[in-house]
Amino acid sequence: MFHIKAILTPSTKEAAVLVAMVVAIISIGIIQFEAAPHVPILLSILLLMCYGLLKKLSYRELERGLIEGAGAGMGAVFLFFFIGILISSWMMSGTIPTLIYAGFSLVTPVFFFAVVFVVTAIIGLSIGSSLTTVATVGVALIGIAGALDLSLAITAGAIVSGAFFGDKMSPLSDTTNLAASIVGVDLFEHIRNMGWTTIPAFVLTLVFFGLLSPSVTLDHTEDIALFKEGLLETGLIHWYAVVPLLVLIVLTVFKMPAVMTLAASSVAAIAISALHQKPQVAETLGILFGGFKSSTGIKEIDALLSRGGMESMFFTIALVLLALSMGGLLFKLGIIQSLLAKIESLLKKVSSVIVASALTAIGTNILVGEQYLSILLTGQAFRESYDKVGLAGKNLSRVMEDAGTVVNPLVPWSVCGIFIASVLGVSTLEYLPFAFFCLVSPLLTVLLGVSGKTLTYSEKP
Picture 1: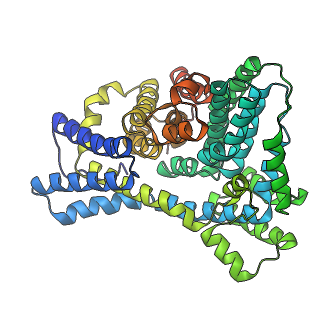
Picture 2: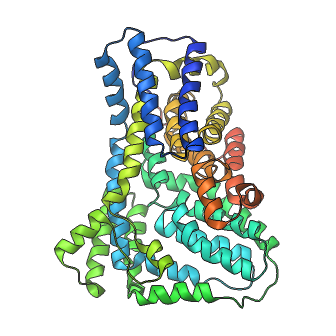
Picture 3: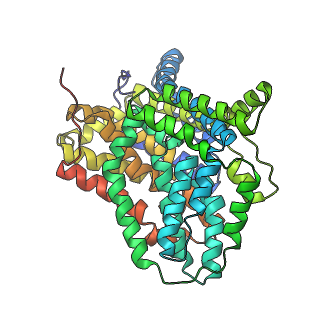
């Protein structure tokens, strides 16, 4: 994106006004009117195009900016299609249901809050979706906490922490794929590099919840038993269903390209599904495109397992292409360059670049309430700055997730914050102090960035 050549040099004041107008359009659309971000972004693109035309630029030049911006995301688009196929194939093979079943088997009366965190983390990793984890497993766990008269705020904090750990570290997650793609980093290299901040954050969070967990007897297990029974009734729970996961892990260790790794794991899953599903070719192709549809009759189980398919990625792909197109215009019109030039003197040290990018990701979440835009705009704005101080791209992708992805549920007016509060029945401000993982992650990424620890520098030619 930063290779797009500016054809204007607006003043800093002019650039700031335009960015403020874009932020206002998007944030009002999302927060005030609860609209999907696509239309506000499209309106912002129209605003920028009108500005360009007023500056006597040709429509063809502006269109080129849109195309160049969108072109930067084609790698991500291709990867998203394979993610959709992988999820649906893992459902067919029983890989994801088996992992979820194993997670429910961990629920015990000892260290209840810590166990809630671990279970939601496992399920979040398995399905790659924080909101799906919260809306299904989270609802069951919050119900158990209510029956046991335990703190709903702490339970919600544990659910959110585990769900967003899984979302952040899962190769099935769209935010994880987006962060890696936007800076041109291999998906699994990005995940490995996040371990430097994510593993300590996970351990600290587990300790916090362990200390907060009361000594209780878990007598009200109806919800968990219902989930486990429903999963068994699908006929998808088998020990050999973990083979596609093993294929994914082995190929990752051998540093195979992400697309090839996802494709190989999907093929293994489809082959395993033949052992107990015996689907027809037409049915298999339909599932790979439209997603797996569960029909157990148990609402929560069906909501948890009815996922995947190329079609499920269309919402995210459309959002990515629109946001990147807007970014292309912002760069083509010289708006981002103008703003960065103002603070360029402050971005000559590694620590200042890390802090500035983290604050940008957090600020975008607070102002706009959208985690995708937080990742996209931070990646677009700071990739060149990271290059200038000699930092490898995977440092930026890590910051984008540590200060972007996991911060969104902490913002009461954000997409995730509103959704989680409505589903769990616990307000964002109530669970915020206990969403330890989401609080610790941005803090760790800034501290390690300032100290210079765990950073990777670009190889000099």
